[in-house]
Length: 70
Image (cartoon, rainbow, N blue to C red; front, side):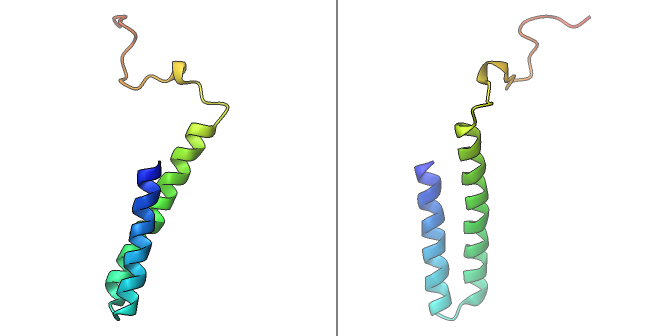
């Protein structure tokens, strides 16, 4: 989480620097990436903090716990 948040901060800093140099297109691109990073960070945080999350019920590799179909 911290790495993602630091990356977002870096992207926002880069956007501000680009705006200061008059490079508005690059600034907009960096800001958009920072905004997307915030969405990802917020989603991950929500999942991690959710009291309704039941990790033992997650089937991440889509296997049927060793049972054969049919």
